Structure formats: structure tokens, C-alpha cells
Length: 187
Image (cartoon, rainbow, N blue to C red; front, side, top):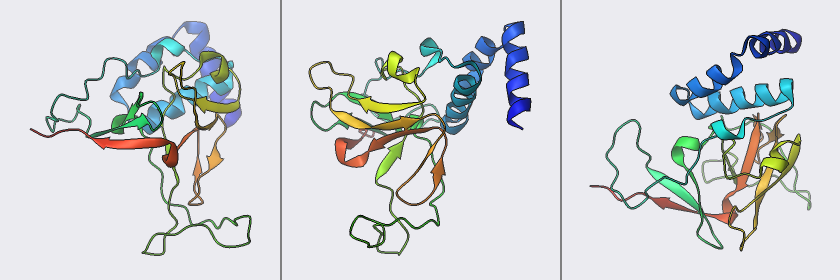
């Protein structure tokens, strides 16, 4: 299967269709866009940084319009308040049934319902992420504010295990403890 995907991307790259597919990605869900970027990276070894979503033009003060193209909440760096992502960039995953041991031998954290809690937010690759770091298979995510540079989380193009036990691919993991989740004002 991986060989088949490689062949398809090689053919598309030869014909010049990879850029067209990535540019059409705005109609896809965040999970589908993340998988498309991961497949491109894993087959070609590069990331088209210009086609990654950007939060630079997002107006968080405008009231939510409840349209399908509007976002409901956004996340900021807890230290410097830099805008990082909106709910439209979050990659959802099913809560895993895995079991993860902690250092002291206990089970992972669970919510009151008994299901494991996710301690991270998984997002699609974003334009603010360091272009040189994204060229590697795995690395750390730092706040884009040059005066802050707080470590927000980690990334791995091949995927990683969430604290709930689910496997997320690709994994651009932002620790919830490092961000403030803000609701957009309603009309």
C-alpha cells in the first residue's frame, strides 16, 4: 500500500499535479489536509510551506456568524498570547482504548466518565511552524513569537500516541497546558 501511494505521488509530481492537489485542500477537513501534507512529506521529503494554513489574517474580535466557514474558538500561547490555531485546524481523533502507564505505575488520567482524557490538541501543520524544523521527520513545536519561543509540543510526521491511547497520524501535538482556549464572541 505504501509503495502504491509512493508511485501515485511520484507520478503526480512528475506530471505537476501535487501543487494542484494541495491547493484544492481548502475544501477538505483538517484531518484530510493533515494526511495530505504527511503523504507529501513522506514521499517527497519536503513540505510546501506556502500551502499551509495561516492564522495571521484571522480576526478574533469579530463576532461568530455560525456559518460553516467561521471558527468558534481559538487557542493562544499561554505565555505571550500569540494566536496559534482555530478549531478549524484541529485534527480530531477517536478516544483510544489504549492503556498508558505513568512513571509511578498508575493508569493514565481519566475523566469522570472513566474514559481517558486527551492532554494535547492535535492540529494540522501550520505556516507559523518553523520551516526548517518541518523538514525533519520529528521535532519540537515552538511559539512563533521570537521573544517567547516557548515549547508548545512536538510533531512527528509518522504519528504518535495520544495520552488517551489513540494513534494520531501525522502528529502535530500542542500541550493543552501551554495554551489558552478562547471562545469567539457571538452576535
